[in-house]
Image (cartoon, rainbow, N blue to C red):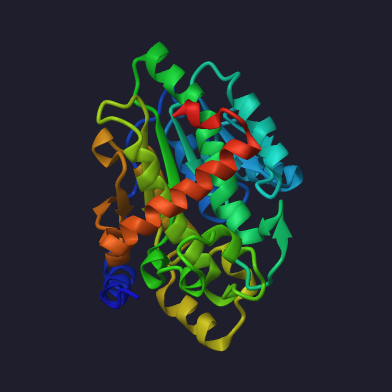
Length: 327
């Protein structure tokens, strides 16, 4: 565990306020997953306010998505910009159908992969523990499936589209303890799917570490002139639907004292989605590039990154044959 990250975390929460977005998004098209509540909703609201031509709210619950659209329209006084598309990251078929629809768009400027879950209850989605399925496997399945559309937009409109993976500061707080319970030849993902080996109390941090590792591994497969900017970012500790299962007194006190509003946290999502190509492969926090955890940067972290990508990419290829060629 990187204990210095705790000091950075408290400093950021108490003394840093992410910059309010002012950059024009006129003529641009955005997709935000998990956009009916929390950070996704507020990021979508900013993008509409900033003049985007279209903001697609990718939501599991269409009814809640439509309510979010009405909320955005009322607050921004702009109608016909935000729209709802169905996406359920607990289903690989839903991800593939969503990606097919994305492929029909004539232009995409940025996709913010914000949707995620946090639970201490062990359950399986698509044969894998639910947090890993939603936060990692489906997130990167979608990323690879939409890369052709993003690259096509780059060529057609002479733009640099962005693909942003929402991670978290909590990736500093773990090194995937499940991997220490298995031999080097055993699968990390299989260990994470085992109720006997899983430590569900830190599963959310583990999923976010996997996001950081997989993003870095993915970007290593690209060149510096790659037509899509792929980055990952930390929104900070915010009021969010993610914390709805956390009802302990200590957590509630911390929430009251430390948490950013969802609007303030969402500024970091917008910053990453509008960032320059200098952020390609980088981890952002408080709207600027920061170093990821010490573990990520260590030799052990590098070996783990290679193993995670080898396992994840094999699973993605099995789910959608040929998807790795999209890189």
